Length: 176
Image 1 (spheres, rainbow, N blue to C red):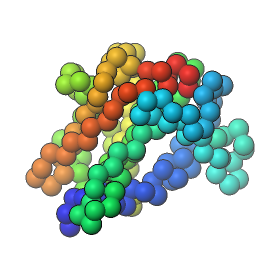
Image 2 (image 1 turned 30 degrees about the horizontal axis):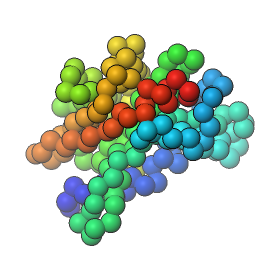
Image 3 (image 1 turned 60 degrees about the vertical axis):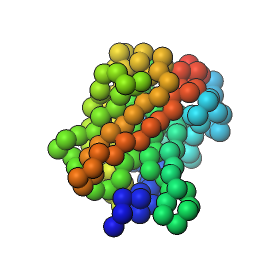
Image 4 (image 1 turned 90 degrees about the horizontal axis):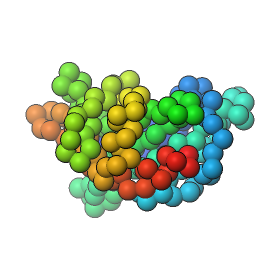
């Protein structure tokens, strides 16, 4: 099956990620930004808490969705990237990559061609494979100053690369 077809199953992943991550990030600080606010290429997303969870469990995140045209000409989501609060000053980066990527070589993130940072696999579900990393002070500074990030992984015998715009991320993080 061509790689592009495998990417097509990502569309439902965001709802599942919200359900899984809400308990982990329920201590989100008060926001100056609200659901739907846009900062460059990043959007604030504040899904409702899953059924049975307290209303305070809803968590907001900065999100960007990367799409490409599939073989049928329709847009297909290839990456969902999100930044969540761990605390007032700590963040975690989370995303979905295509099923079938090779875990041993790992997933690397670089900003403007600089230092590579590892994204750690969490689990694979039908919508894709989840990767995450806590954003330390060095990476946070790099992301805020950067223009573009590149996520690189191996899928079959090829290297997959997804470009992510950092336009608006710094502003979004100051208001998020």
